[in-house]
Length: 466
Image (tube, rainbow, N blue to C red; front, top):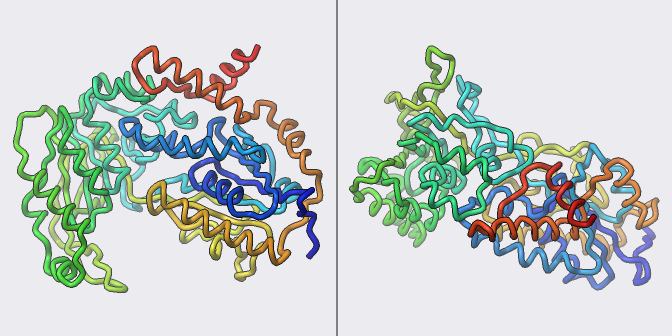
């Protein structure tokens, strides 16, 4: 197929999603293509960086240093940012296909997976995503409220997000006051009555998904003592046999850290219970119709498909009193109108980043990277290799001439966007907002104080340039 790509007419790529996968894809395109490249990045939020801004816990500021690398990518002359633009609302996928040789979706995994048990939608039963986005100042979640008057809270899951939720609930206001946590969240946590947090894992300690630095940090909280039951740290025969046959240094270290936490005994006012081999079977409502407790079943590990150890329910049950619950049991992507989607896996259907239809045929010019491509696995850096694989597929297709031919002029996309979204955010607008947030934070001895509504962000930028 003929293509208009040439040194005089560069490869035009739209990246939908301004999180790590999107920036890593842009970086790889600029670095590895032997042709001139223009990358236009779109995001439904005015601000870039995705979960690095809205998902990384506020007390983990160092992790956000990765944005310096993203900023360096954004300084490339071939880069443009269209923030506050929602694909499907302000412009369509067809608009993108009309203006670009290639479109890459890096929209992440935006919603929590459900447990599918009784009482899951009771008042005070929330997804972890909602809470994390709320305390990070995400505009879509800033108006939520959480009943922090409850003394006992359950966090279902033992991944890093679950650990973040538990840790934030256990931090003192003084610890949080030096972070960039949203002001309204800090105010709410100042009056928190939470005294016990239960973090629940359905499998054993060796299978827990949290990383060692994350779990180690739970033993260093100023006002919360970790509580780990010795009987739940005893390895079952299947796990023991597996570790003996396949020694793993990180798992050994994880178990060592947990045994150390189990030995901690002190008088800190809060208790953070880390439980294993238990699963919720139903959420129980009190007389007021709100969450009052969680019924748990004791699990045993059995060998499943591929030798993987999975949890199997026993007849042993217990009732755990709790007035607030957060579910952190995995995430799934949201379909993009007009893009093939695998609903079972919660990802865009693809092969090595090339989007494929229901018959397995490649959809020319359309790609995916990050969580929307592979599912919600890995850490921020995992997206780099994932994006590199997708870009490799893109450049192979470019070399083979398998590139869509845009019908519209390269620069007309801005007119199309501004016609339906006058409040589009450029990267310069973001840099101005970033400067304002940092200045507000500096005045309080904090990294930044975030603006948390779209209206506020637009207003502040307009005011700064008027």
